[in-house]
Image (cartoon, rainbow, N blue to C red; front, side):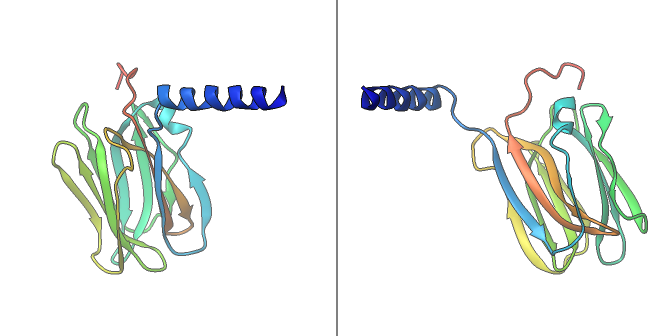
Amino acid sequence: MLAIAVLALLCASASANAIQPRSSSYNGEYGGGGGRRFSHSGNQMDGPITALRVRVNKYYIVGLQVRYGKVWSDYVGGNQGDLEEIFLHPGESVIQVSGKYKYYLRKLVFVTDKGRYLPFGKDTGTSFNAVPLHPNTVLRFISGRSGSLINAIGLHWDTYPSDCSSC
């Protein structure tokens, strides 16, 4: 009897997986050690990524802030350097992120589904290239570690939110 119950549970689980294929994936963490952990996982509930603020100095990515829908995330990182801000076009999404790091993040390049290439920082260090594991998914939020600079970044991918009329 127990074997039948276990078999039924396994079959139900397998059919549930067939109904709802997995769409989320993660790349990272790219960078060095140290810093305090941060995550924008809750921010994705405000909508898709609609803008990026990246602070850079002569050598590093100093700070990051992301706008989800119409709401800016908390700023992470330090305050030294130039702040650059880029807005995505309505319906535009980030589909690839590459960059460079050594002990800290040195370069970030965001590529959109509209063919835009949005580079920040300096071209030195160990390279990385992050894309989603599943088709038709986009960058939904970031995580990582920061202090006076961005120590490391993680990239979280999932489907574009279908219920974002205010974005």
